[in-house]
Length: 486
Image (cartoon, rainbow, N blue to C red; front, side, top):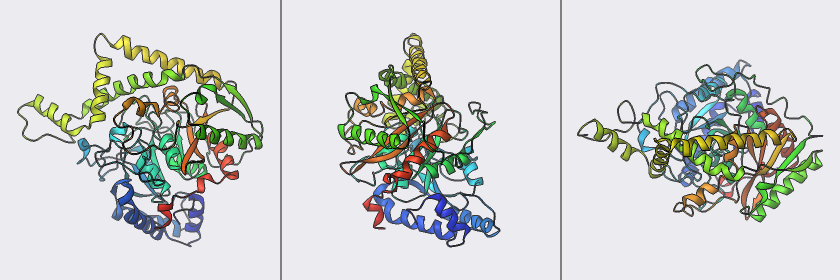
């Protein structure tokens, strides 16, 4: 059952070939058997999941419900879930039980999904390897000695290993797409503002965006159908009407114009990864697409711009964690200032502290114009590069990451090398456009993802392009060996 997609499971539930309770028990058993090796979950909500499954079965027994009713999924542990521990992978929130529900989790619950639990992540979504969690590193199910990517690595590993049919993730600089690539699943980062951020614990508010992670584009379409749409609780949420993401999946690709940025295929890209990406592009040509080279000249500036803007916003967002109202508080503080400083020093991990310090410095008097304002100007140039390119082509394709998943601990002592892993993904967040990672092959037995980028609010087109590719390839159906034995 763990290898089947949402549409197949939904049909089996409607036909009463299986119940949601049985399906949920199946996944809970897999979590119990396999997650000790992976560490992909922080919280497993067994009793709540079984209650939700019973409720879903009651709805299905009346001939009601939709494609997601009774489907067990997982949530990245930065979505607030009322009454369920929400930690953001941090000691700072090790005891935080939200009194309210995020819009994303609420909409998916209303669609009938069953929440299996909350997945592990880099602390406050800061990281590219899922090694920065207070709860320990997550392992990649394809090779337990490698990283699953970050920060949504717990969600990616859980889906890849068949511990959940799908999961939610968030993408601030590639945190859905990179782990999806490393773990061989499909992940979509929607247009900024397409999915509400209400109840999503913020890292960098102008960059964060929630999205679905699943085995296939079709499954992601079902998830996005429930997640997307305007929310009055989020002032950055777009009022642009959503599309029917599922019904447009089967449109032919004849006439599709694909742009290949020359900057994505230069020094630093692994030769095997480059070949896999080009082989995937050839499949699209067989489906009727045409390909042309394009240029995104400011791509190299995306890393320095991002690592000024994101830490600056994090410095502001994380100032609310002060030991006063919620979260970790130090013991026996001498006075208010001692409580602030010790609570933050004890609650935040090393990477989070680094980024807070960088952001505070960039925003400080005398440096705001030199760093933050200049980074925002570069951001405008990067956005314009994409706008210009997408006037010539329908979608842009390239690698998600320069390499396959790297070894645990191999880059922790070299932050620059870690940051360079995001060279192909950061610019998408700075521009605010949608993009996704689609399994495209294997290099040395490790998955490689193809990145597909599109114009604003073109999620339906991206899902259509990815789905058509997945109709003629089987990379998205591959399962890690460790998952088969359970």
